[in-house]
Image (cartoon, rainbow, N blue to C red; front, side, top):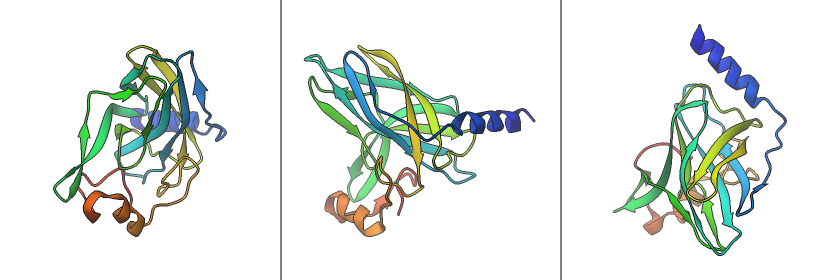
Length: 179
């Protein structure tokens, strides 16, 4: 009963108008936070965005949280021979006066143990934690399951193959990328 009630609460909270937006602090600009819709029984999801340091001091994304997941980690994809593998990392550097992109096939915020599916055209609240800026609350818009960017669109298998080093098409963990 509690699990059903919690899932309904998360669903209601995410049924806000699909108006995720850029967010600016004194030192950072976070652009186009987004995620992909998940299947009903899918236990993982990911959040992507662009983070810009607006000062001559960089920052570092060191953690994140989302009430709709049991655990949230920062991940990166790496090529291990001809296999693309996902790995947990300690953080992502945001260079001084520079930008870092969290995108499919690269850095991303991994949502593990989803308590309810991420539904297309909803908004999910995520808190990012930075070494310098501290906690920053963002809203990520949930795009279609095959979306490859903040504005939607799907990634076809051939496009994914071209994006990967040495033409590799294997994905070691089986989540976070569509084929």
